[in-house]
Image (cartoon, rainbow, N blue to C red; front, side, top):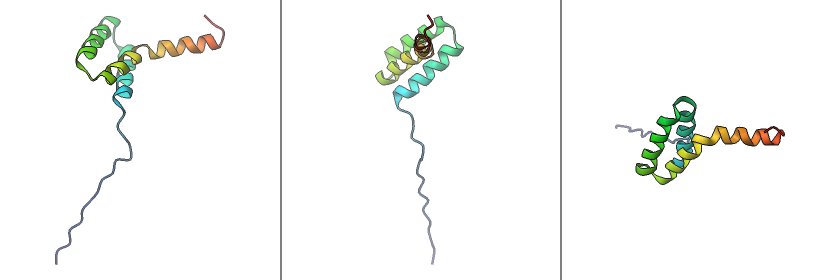
Amino acid sequence: MKTTTTLVFTDSVTAPTPYAAGVSEGRADAASTSPKVTAVRASWISEFADQEYSDGYRAGLTFDRDLDAVLRSRRGRP
């Protein structure tokens, strides 16, 4: 008699949404790439990528700058 064991893999970590992946990539590019290069990438992504990813990428490009502005305004600094 032969016994067969079937392994079932479950992924406990879900993949990020396209928007979240775009934000992550946009933040990384904004931190490590020149503005001219990110402008070209943003135009390519806007034209060819999924709309949700594209929206996330554009938001990611300005995320840290926008966050810094909010935190400064809450501290009363310009």
